[in-house]
Length: 76
Image 1 (cartoon, rainbow, N blue to C red):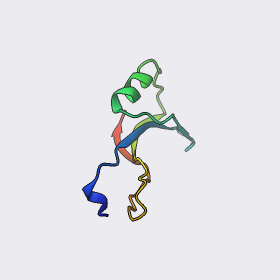
Image 2: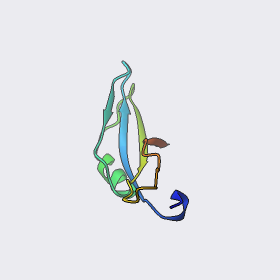
Image 3: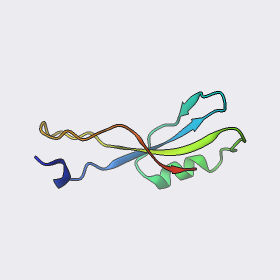
């Protein structure tokens, strides 16, 4: 099966990088809207960088080999 012919869907999470290079990851959400709602009450601090990452949802088709590596899609 061609991986471009069916919809995997995506999940989203926050990635926070601190000045010392440490990385914190949030939980995965099913929509960008859910991620935005979870980030709303968080006070953003100078010296930290905030990103939104997306990853493809795994597929049950044995022939399907989609890249599930999270990719930064926005800077929060």
